[in-house]
Image (cartoon, rainbow, N blue to C red; front, side, top):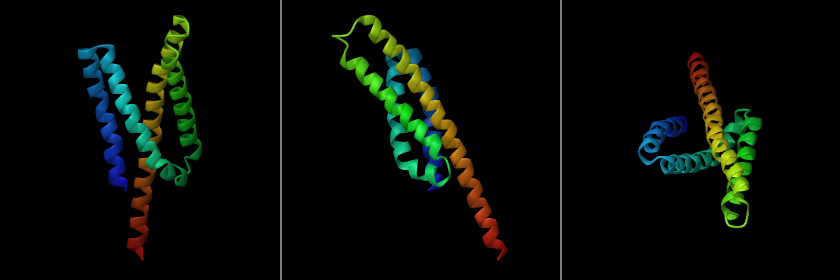
Length: 134
């Protein structure tokens, strides 16, 4: 499972330069598209890895991730579902809050994911050492 988690984590990290290039070429649309792709990828990744986070003792950290992600998604949904009925200033404030919030949540997920991978790698190495001594 660890090699798959490493591939997942580094694959997400490789998407950042792709996001930056698309942002330069496509302007704001490229940033939003890249943020959407990485966000969906991270949500799927977190869904599959939540159990690993909890077993590794990162329950509080992954809980914060889910709380912030759900709150950000709800605000984003509220922003785009009320485009026609809400005042423009409210929509702009919601968009200005949710988009940087999504980027910050993505960075937070990478930080805890790298810590999880480091811990799992260390545990695997220690398990190998203890098994070889017997």
